[in-house]
Image (cartoon, rainbow over all chains, first blue to last red):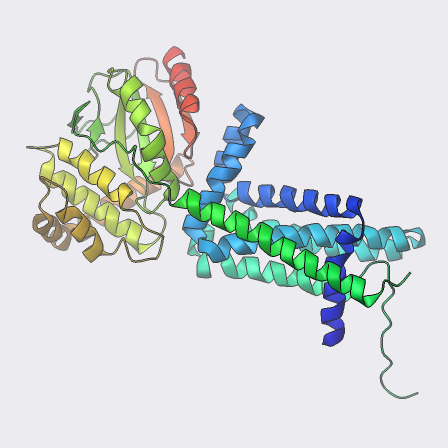
Length: 177
Length: 250
């Protein structure tokens, strides 16, 4: 258990190890937050941004207020946490790929779980709307917060297994030989 | 390759503090945005009149039971689907509707048709039924009171699921609106709820047939040329202005 926690902490610390990584993680986090926020009301977002991409800030700000009113502080906190964790996970996943990338499949296998876990953020907030089930999240238990929490847990599990992507995890031996 | 533990720990702590600070900032901003005062809502009984109609428009909207704001002879219909628990509808009422009333509805070019689209839970449906009962009560003698009641409800909107849209709470709000008798509204709800819910369900089905999936939603219909256009959500006034011009000139 302690091992998982220390690997999780190491994964969160990794983006702060250089300025470029911090910037990349921040950029991904902001992008993810915008995407998640816009996907809470996709028809509105598409129509407004289709009219003028300059409305991006207006749409994000308006939908942030809307999200707070419909899902509460907890819902908004989960989305923010999801965005930040996605930034960390993707930065760490690509860091891992750079370290192990030259080994082909091994590099890929370390990135794909991160991408899948991050991609599931959309499942929590956007895909239902995109599929035409607007209001579906409102009818889900806790206004979809459970779904968001599940996605966040998925990311945290991934990070707790990955740890600092520059380090190789040493699995303690168990059993008998 | 290995980092010293103390450095990693410091970075982890820094990351945690940064994350909490950023997250807290966004949530705080969200709470401030969500609690903006609706001081600009169009609650005045001055301005364009509210009236009734039993016609079915060329677009296929049955106006029976729906309050209509603006001139009966306006060229453009603006069908407005809303939910009293929808924060975006509140935003539209506070920021955009007053300008639309001033520049388009008050001048006689647009008439706005209020249609209930309750999809955010039981409170939304209760408010929608009450909306119909209030309209039934005031439509003959004091139809402008409907606007006051409608605006007051959005002004008093609370968080979804907080209980603000319970029957008792809504009746208490109704009791504070001049010209609307809360006891009569309560009586109407008790006697006619089933029939009204059925009528609202028909409206919701019609909205879904039109592809409406959220609120507020608007369809503009040019009664002369039979052309139409739509806007979804609480978009800036400029978008409404542009859409109205498009449909008028179509």
